[in-house]
Length: 151
Image (tube, rainbow, N blue to C red):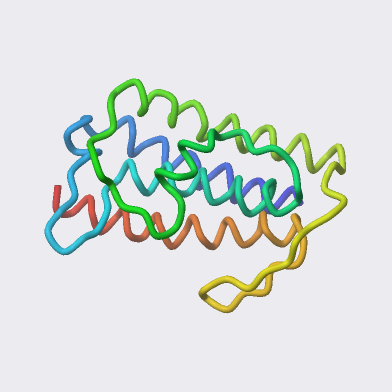
């Protein structure tokens, strides 16, 4: 699992740089041809990791139900995100990852509801879910790099 978390941490560092290097207006801008923005992608990554690893393990998530409803798959930005919400998302980038790392070290994931992703991955354990989460993050980071060109 150490390699999985090393990849996750590097990915989260990249997410953090988007917050550091873009204004609130830029984070909220949905460029023509896109259905979401930078901040939606960051929050979505956090929410999906929590759903994949914790919810499907029958454990409480570290994100609110409101956040899940706002950033889960199939959603898009309906309103601009406030600076307060950006600050909360900034905190969750690393706190969720560090808690996950600790929870895996403490071996709390003893059950899992398997499912098949829309891309065809059969996720059958919390361990696999964490690895798939890295793939999912990479896809969204690619989208974010494209969005960055148009803001």
